[in-house]
Length: 329
Image 1 (spheres, rainbow, N blue to C red):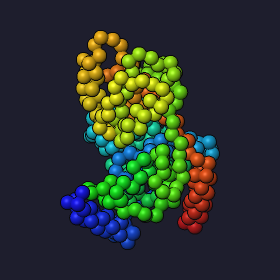
Image 2: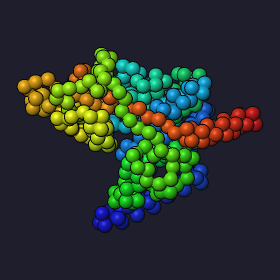
Image 3: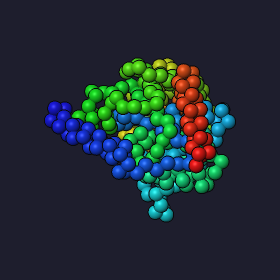
Image 4: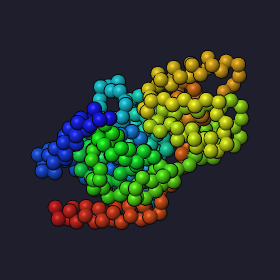
C-alpha cells in the first residue's frame, strides 16, 4: 500500500482539479428539465445503490410522483445498432443494457434508460415518457456533468476502508464531501448516518415465475453471486438455516459467458444428483439464460422513516425551487 500512496495523492489532486473546473464553470454541467436525484457512493464497488434506487422509486410512486431511472449501465457492450443510449425494456439483452438497470426495470416497471452521458439518457427518457416528473440516477455521484438537485451517498459494510483514494484505497474521491443524505446499508454503520435494513425475502422464484419458500428447500443447495459483496448473500442464506454444499463468487458485473462456464463446471462436479442453484436477483438476469431453474432470492430493503422524512423535506424544497425558477423565467 505504501508504494501506491503517491498515486493516491495524485488521484486526489486530479479529482480536486476536475471538481474545481466544474465549480468554476469551465466544464459545463447539463441540467435536466425535471428534478434529478443522484444515488451514488465514494467507494469503488457496490454499496447498495441499486436497492436504494428501487426503494426510492416505490416511495416516490406512493407519493403520486412519476419517476424514471437513468444509469450508465456499467459493463454493457455496445448495442447491435451501434447506439450508446438505450431504453431498458423487459426483453432487453442484459449484455447491452447492464445487469443493474435490467434489475431496476424488472422490479419497478418504470422507464429506465442507459447512456454513458447521463444527460443523454435523461433527455431520451423524457422525450419518450413526458409524464415523468423526477429522475433517479443509479450511480453518478462523480458524474459531475449532470446537474443534480439531491445527492445521496450510500455506504456498505466496507465503510471508508483505509480512507485512501484509489489505487492505495477504495475511495473514488476524498471524504468527507458535501452530500444531502448519507445512507448505510451494511450490518454495522461506519459513522453517523441513516441505516437501512436488508434481509432476504421468504421466497425465491425461477425464470418461469415458479415461487418456492426458502424454508422448504432441501437437498444439495449451491449459491452463486456475481456482486460486489457475494459473501453477504451467502451469509444471509446460511442465517436462514440453509445448508450450502458450495458457494461461488463470480466477478461483480460478470458476463453471460462467466455464468455459462460456471454452470458447466458445477454440472461436472454434481453429476450424481439434482442440485438447486440459488442466486441474487442481479445474477438472475444473466444466469436464467443458461439455467432457467435457478432460484433468485429477492432482497427486502427498507429505508428508515427518518431517512424518508428528510428526503421528503429536501424533495419539497427542490420542487419549490424548480417552480420558482420556472415562474421567474
